[in-house]
Length: 141
Image (cartoon, rainbow, N blue to C red; front, top):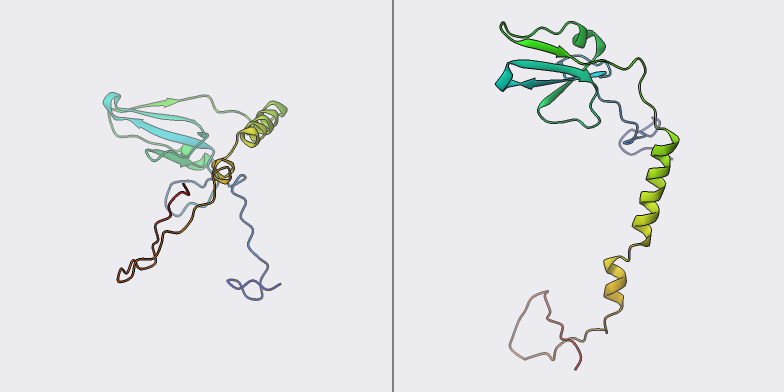
């Protein structure tokens, strides 16, 4: 099947779960390995392992830019220990995800509660009144 947005090319595949965050520095296309956060009140820049979530007031940096980080004069750099390898999801993480899915499936949804109500009837039409596309439904007595 041809891709409408990409005629003649392979279809694009988006993998949101495995998305790789890129370095925040302009024109850098490398994968981020560290997160930089500024603590303005203490004139400190904190450089640590890549944060779990991208935060609006922090910067993801590749290994090159994390290694060559410079800060304004009078500021301190606090470098946290970087892991040797990237953490992969373990069996405990997968079990927790499976339990969360099971729990969400066992909770009754609002759609189930809506089907339990009696069917609503349309009100009697009153001549000379135009209500457009909206109608008021009354519960049967």
